Image 1: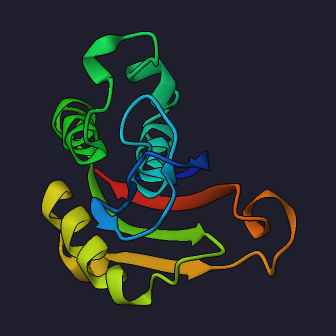
Image 2: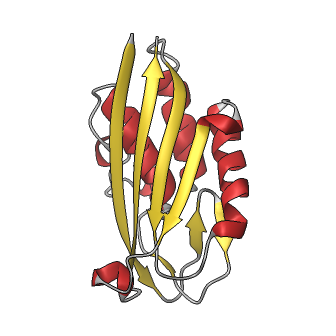
Length: 158
């Protein structure tokens, strides 16, 4: 049986936080605001996995009212979803396709490490993971450097 899920996440860029995407700390003057480390890429992948399993979204599993998840690594959250939802339901990931929408900094030199981190956390081959980085051509909240968006699609099978 095949199932597909899609995920979306958006976080505001602020001073005093680290910019973490795909488990990689990227040098930048701004970081993402959120309850956890606010890794929009991993959050969108988690939402896609939960969607494929028809189990809601990241906020239902890791509510921002629960201090156990305050400043936690999103890589930990991804492994938790794999171990406690995906694997226990008998599903495995065939592939992930994702897009990060960010005006600056450029991400090309970090994408391979992001892919490796996610592959390692999910115990899947790196060639099952696609990560693309796009700008919003200086339009909207992303274009003004106020936020970062990520979208992901995952295909799972039993």
